[in-house]
Figure 1 (spheres, rainbow, N blue to C red):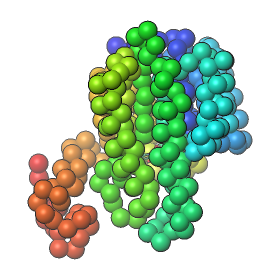
Figure 2: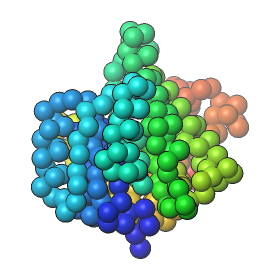
Figure 3: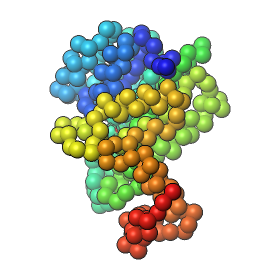
Figure 4: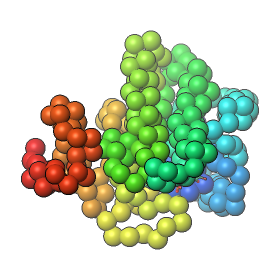
Length: 273
Ligand SMILES: NC(=O)c1ccc[n+]([C@@H]2O[C@H](COP(=O)([O-])OP(=O)(O)OC[C@H]3O[C@@H](n4cnc5c(N)ncnc54)[C@H](O)[C@@H]3O)[C@@H](O)[C@H]2O)c1
């Protein structure tokens, strides 16, 4: 059973559509007969992905270079989508930056990453939600989080922070939609596992972006809010174990990030659910 928002002729808008999961999603939506608006920073990658998606599509595809962190650019995008496509049925807020690795990364990188990963999502929702669900039409908003925004592993704190904020924001959005509507629009938090994206070589253990997109579509069809993808290295059961251990840091009064604490690592290794 396909979700009603995936009907042929409907409109999917995908941010970060030049590469990786966004590109695979744009391709899948086009193959399903949706009209697709591909959004990314201007680049040869966006041009090449637009060519590939267009040639697989039976309906309209557009590529609109836009920086999701720039509200006025997003408003221009919204106006052009409104006049060209009439509106959006599926909004996939997927664009992300991985700048600013390490706790001492430049503050400009911390700001930039939050502007793209968090504000880009907020801008997408602010620009497109008001015109979704009109007349009870089904709509879907998927915001892309990360396991790093749930379990908070050491190494890239600003990325973890941005994805934890996307999780919190999307949970609030789900509550808002079911309380104040439009009730025909649902929102979902897609949490990919380790996925080969960008221009990286595929390595054993990782999923391909197409697997993530198929898993996302199944999750939307099932009405799941949390769509947490496994990969070939980390099973669904292992994800549950890690998430429950992280929550236990709070309820069991353990040190923060105890999973990586020398006194706790062995206890975590023995932890069973
Ligand atoms: N690949 C993984 O293992 C993995 C794991 C967990 C979560 N994710 C999340 O999945 C989503 C997709 O990531 P991916 O791995 O496919 O990455 P990717 O790098 O292949 O694609 C990200 C795209 O976002 C675009 N982008 C960056 N800044 C932008 C901006 N300001 N405006 C518009 N577009 C912008 C990039 O140009 C790029 O095309 C991201 O939200 C990422 O955080 C990925």
